[in-house]
Length: 326
Image (cartoon, rainbow, N blue to C red; front, side):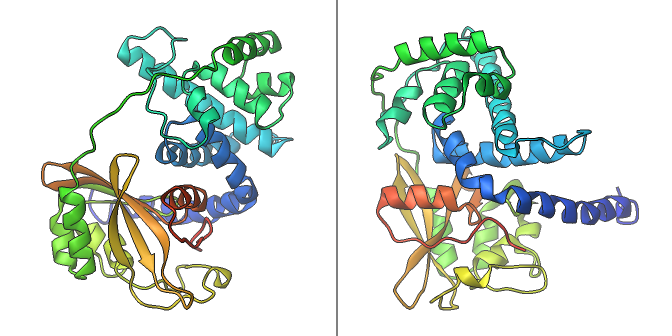
């Protein structure tokens, strides 16, 4: 498609931004609870944040096709998340050849929250029912609505799920190589955007969760909109957006530094920002290597629930950025 031909798509993209932002603003108060719910369902903070982002996207699309607005936005959002997650687990079981209600193999008990670890041994329906009932206080009828099932099926799932809450066998997996992560941090701290983009493949995906998605080195290095340009800069606010002033108290406007840390057997990148009270982490990144390059880069900045969980577990100081960039 030529530049002239893609004008309708660019117009559509611009027209979609105002309603999308209005939607996020309206549902922002539900984000902490939504992350908490997704975190009980998912195995890792990263999977939980992915589920949050997918839930928001699906809810936005679904809202546009509803004749009436949901009477209970909280319950409706949990329903969207539940349906997405149960469907995802069922597809995973079909690929792996496991029976539909067979729990996935247990993982290492790395969570500090033992109850969350125990839940990993339940089937998707059982886990969602137990969490909605015992953590969020939903009634049986509310759970049935959230899971698109009957009250009788919910009672059965609760009974079976609670009976399975026993300590799973531990398992270990080797830590992945940090070679590419180390190279990324070295280039970042040298402020060398050419070395950074050289780590990318033509098909690399850079995702700033909740803000932007880019494809390939040229998009990442763009001096106006590129994520790498933004990563290497101090936090700023302009006509396109930026952080609310309440998040910048004591912030010193200098570029951040990157540091590799191991988190649950995986090398991740912490980004340290200067403040009058000392340095604090305001962002995280996960890299998916492909040989000596980066296939995917997930940058977590506008994901304050995930940021708080990971930094508390690593016992490092952190500062929140909120959920939006406009």
